[in-house]
Image (cartoon, rainbow, N blue to C red):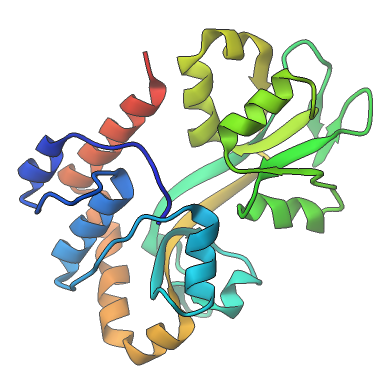
Length: 241
């Protein structure tokens, strides 16, 4: 799983969970899921692109927060039902939006980003929106390590638009008034995505009952008080002052 903001110890104590070395949202969600499903799970925090590589090459067994694509389905087993992706077994949902400079006339209409020039586009390396845009014929000329880098490049006029996750970009804008005055989010969403707990295909095939228990526990777990408390705390921390 990828790196994110640390959460307070009290959330683990209230949920009756052992305190981990890394106290971030994804780690807590993994522990809550393991607790509910009755399945032992060990969480390791890595940079996102390395998460993808480790599971794809079989050195790690699973990855939390992976959106579906045909390319990823070649090496990752997603929760399926009736031959279709089982959205009830999602971990969370999110959406990509275009972010542009506030004083420039960019519009997102009918699946096209319209503006005064051919846009120079940035996106976070390893995120599914990169392949989506490329499949739509959009050149992603700049791939950055994270949303903060993309927003900085917008303000420096090094790119014209950035395709970013709303839950990553919006908190940055809320926490930095100067940045918020210079960058806006376009509506509607560029791409809406569900994020899943996915497994390396060989591991899923060899551990079918264990994997199924974890997926089956997700719908009820998303509605639990401990899960909602962890997500609310993470959201408040992302919003900043």
